[in-house]
Every structure is written in structure tokens, then in C-alpha cells.
Image (cartoon, rainbow, N blue to C red):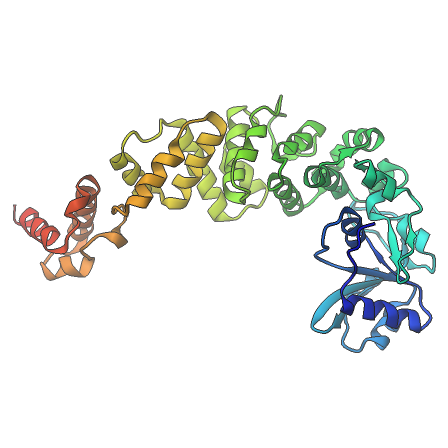
Length: 397
């Protein structure tokens, strides 16, 4: 195992619980990351102490999930989740246990977890409990369910998304029985909240292997949101050329799905997944722009920027280059770097200047648009006095 060790505040919580006679260990993702040599972002502690006992020992703690045995302990202004060893009943909604029971057995607690790599515990003395072979699976880069994979996915259908997300993030393979269970149990995903599906899909899109969204589609996990399944991942593989940002990667995915007939429109698809309005608007605009030829001159680029804004035009240029090749980004960057005006806020005159000339109402807006169009074509003439003269002359004629 890597030499990464928990910070002092985590050690202090563990030692304090142990000193009171309770079994205590690190579990879950932090242990997996330690084995992989990655600094954990969060530290999770599991203990035989009941939630009420944890709160008595740590008066600053908060009862953030008492029904599941979880207490958030505050130590040196840091938060650590401390959860009592537990077993779980059936999952009627295929997402949350109907009830939990607190147990004193670590192995029983680990047996309820999703994947073997997340079912490893490290005790205060550094000894490792690994009853399901998680360390070997990490060594072999395998994602394997704890116990019966079909049962694990029946308990929580989101685990199928998590398996593929971990595969994309860690570059691990999903072992055959687990993958087969995903395909068999994929219909359960239809009952998941759209927000959960959105979040897991986005996390896959933002990895170095965004093409594994195809695994979601091929398994049928996104059937609720698609008209049909994508036939291959050739274009999806090109998404990795995009910046690891949500907006261009969602836009590229929408373009691929729409082009393949899998969705009717980015708007309908993203609305069904509860994406935010900015992303929906940008992806819809990008889809339209990608149907058109790219601008052929700096003036055309500026006019497009004026109509659609920097974010949308940049996103469309990135998607075009990544999916189909070309140098749209290079041309766009040259225009942006030039500093030439393409928006009202950079125009050398304002609405107040035109009001002073006696231009009002609808004519005011029309004149500002006329001057902006003029300046985009003749950028060297973006000068206040010149534009005021032009406005006055145009108004009089």
C-alpha cells in the first residue's frame, strides 16, 4: 500500500474512538485511493460505536444521517463522516435501503458495499481487512461487485453507472460477471432520478475516457432518454480532444446523438436530464451552428460572436475541430485576440450619446445596431466622434 497516511485530525478521531473501546477503521474511497497512491479528498471512518456514542465523544459533531448511522465529526474545522457498522434490509426503490441495522462486525458492514475495491478497511495500526479480495482487484485493474452483482444492482441501480464511471476514471476493466449483470439489470435505471443519471453521465464525460458514455448507451442505461441506441463509439472517442469542461463535452455528445438519430434535439434531451438553462441554450445553439459552414472571414466571425456570444461560438468551434477537424478555433482566437469590436459594450458610443443627439425609441436601437455592424466591417473606425458624426448624418438623411 502507498505510504499516504491520514491527516492528524483523522488520526485523532480514530484514536479517540479506539481509546473508548470501539473498533474503528478507514473505509471506502479513501482506502482505495491510498492503495492507488492518490491523495484522498475525503476521509470516511467506520466504527462499532453507535451514533449516540459518537456524538457523546465528540460534542461538536452533527447528526447528518442518523437513520443510516452517520455522524459528521468536526475536528480542527475539518469534517469527517463517521458511520456505525451496519447491515441493510431490502431496497424497494432500487436506490435506498428500507431500513438499516447496526452491527458489531466489520465484515458484515463491508459485505453491503458496491465493489471490492471499495470494501477494504484500514485499522489504526495499519492492518488491512480485505475479505473480498479488493486489493487483488485493484492490482489487476478490475471492477468487481461484492458478492452477487445482480443483487448489488437491484439494491441500488445507480451502482451500474458508478461501475462505468470508475472504469472511465481509473482505466479499470469491468469483470465479465459484473458487466453481464449491468446489461441484465439495466431496465432498473429507468426509475432513477434524472439528476442522478445526469451527474454520473457528466462525470464520465469529464474523464480522460469520455467515450465510455457508449457503455451506458450500449447497456441500455440511457434508454429512457434516447430514441434509439448509438451504433458505435467512433465519434465519441473524439470528445477526449475537447477541454475537460462540461459545456463543450455535453455539446459534442448532443451533436453526436442528434446526428445519429438517437435524440430529436439537444433541448429535449438535456431538459429530460435536468441540465441547467445555460447549458441547454448553448448546446442547442451549437447544434445549429454545426449544421452550417464555419465563418469564412473575420467579419463573419464577429457577426456570429455578436449574435451568439463568446461562450457559444467558442464551444461550437471546439466541437467542430474535435469532431470533424479543421482550424475554427485558430480563426476564432485570432479575432478575439485582435480586440476588434463585436458587441455593444465595446462600441465607442453609448445609448446616452445617441439620446443627446435626439435619437429616441426604436430608432435608438436600430442606430446602435447599424453602428455596430459598421464597426465590425471597419474596425479602425470605432471612434467616438466619427461614429457620432455618422449617426447624426444618417439620422438627418
